[in-house]
Length: 434
Image (cartoon, rainbow, N blue to C red; front, side):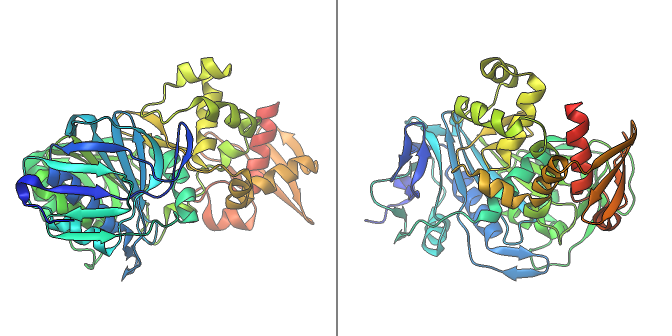
């Protein structure tokens, strides 16, 4: 392809075979038109490419992976994880920033290989960028670069990670919001990905975001400040920044949301740099809920790449309670088909290949809990205490509003930080049925 100058810059992103409302499509086309803010698009995608090619704990360059791309009619969402899965990233390109064409519907992954990254970096500032998401030929082009790329499959651990992200982010609340100037100062002071991982309590103080050694007020804990380094690519464009953390402000997952011209960049961090989203096991309680898997099939058929899932309407159409619809969406998240958008305060739908066997394999404690119930291994001692026989040992389970408790080795090691043990899950399933 002939190189073009800044005034006539064009970019074509190759897509892997995808899933659409019409079924599988070998060469999907999600958008063809103009990007109103070209460098927000290119730098946002490069930030995602930086993250996929980095292992943050300890810092190690890694082979790149390809973001998941979902077209939802009014926006495009590109999502990825770091190589260690401790960092989740999502770039939302909103309809107001995409002109001259319709956004289609579907989910696939977009190749971000070396040639793609080189082409993205070569796109110069311009009033408009001719943008094609999907094409008849798997090609990406920029002002001074052209490359043919081979679509690759999405890592299985990302599917587990997407499910855990949806559940973990669902419980977060806004802790601080700052404007453009303060956001740029914060991003400008971030250490590089290779820097020493600073940690502390992040809070807004006199209009600035500051990291301190002590908790207090609405401060949220951030471990590994260097894990946010990829956001520096968008420093010239950021218009504001919101930090989300656990409602009780205890140490836990953290989300940084950058407001950009007609776009948003979301970065989600695990509570510890050494932990990945793929191993957080936050979906276990939902997966052991009675009838959840059966209801998931019904609800899944009613979703169609919704950018914002209307839960009351979904429950009505599925003829189930709203609480059951929420639980079912958590189950769908387990196979990567439902995400959570903190800005909208709602689930969104992405379509990935469904596999109940994979969900079971990814969550062995849920399967073990169901087997304990089927074996009649539970004995009730009081409304809040049960014994659970597992192999030749008896474990005591105590239910509490402040957090459930078990005498097994798993709980003694991890408590409630890695999801419930199978004995607590079995009791939860039994008490829900009664």
